[in-house]
Length: 148
Image (tube, rainbow, N blue to C red; front, side):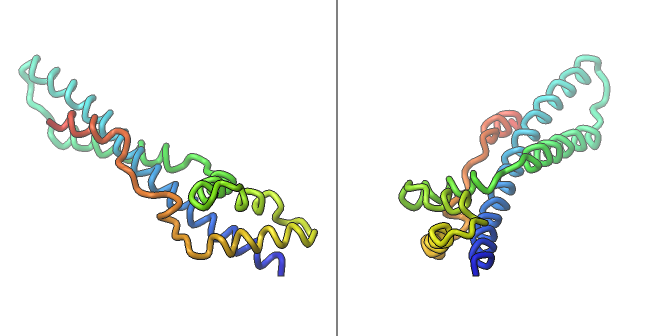
């Protein structure tokens, strides 16, 4: 019974972790794209200064590579279940009930099982989007400024 509760809690936290990782990858892609656009702007200026032709496909590949590299770097960052539990606790009531359940999971004590069951009951109605809402990526302004 206790392992089923712990597995259910871990499953909910892992869904939040996946969403956090997806949002981080999106933010990284935008930031990497902004850096790549700045690099491409310098390259275009250099090509025009030398009166040379601008290789369009190569520059597009640089921007795509920057987006991909940013997404991979930010998306590969480790996100612990503790971080996900803290996010849930911030939404609920900031009493650290979910965090306590994560730390007490695996304990055979009846109190630990009750804490895990309470955390499951309190998070039953929450969607991963509530714990990790979508926000505007940090590098979006730089990307927009670079494309102009």
